[in-house]
Image (cartoon, rainbow, N blue to C red; front, side, top):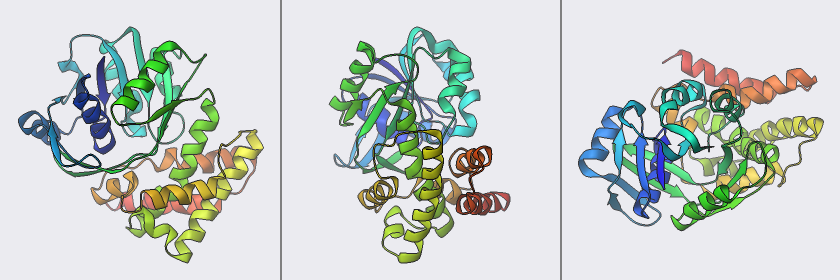
Length: 304
């Protein structure tokens, strides 16, 4: 299968690298030229789960370098850049190309649908953990289940095929038809972990090892849970317990928002805790903890 990974930072590199290692025709797309140059020169240096090795995979710094349509585009770009990234890659998206978003936050599939239509979009969540060590060097820091679902329509043979390819590459994947609950299940984890780890400058496990941080995690997630109940969204897990379980399972990992703040990059705060605040305002549900976390992250960003 010809696969383009749009946004090949930590998680995109792990997915793309493992797929390439298991025989798929993969190209990594990322605007960070140092990262792409290192991959093309030495191979992708992947460590952690599966051992320390170099994987031969092609990288490009712009989708313009790809001339042909691909079978699958996996979108991993940060949420603020979804629209521009997908528009920039629209020439590689043919009539039969599937587009799968495994991004954090709310609203990404809707933005993609405005460009490509909704019928070929797959929405997914992944509980894998990844850390970018240096250009061309990524750690697969935590293994977890990936779940994918059609954004609009029924589960198809092609979605099942993609799940099988991911599973065979060492990324165990299940197919669901509960797209809204799926997105909110993942959002709950991000709401509880990302901003807190970025503000406190700690790995995920710290949050459940200390009483005060654990309470903050609980308060943030319970606010989001109230919104789900008001909207009639069914969650698969108790959101607080699930968030804590993920924090423990990825205890040594640093969240994507922590990594963004450490590298002075724009974060996805508006699409995670900010999304909870916005939904709360629409429904008349107070979300003071999430609102405070949004302001703290914005204050950090303003100091870059």
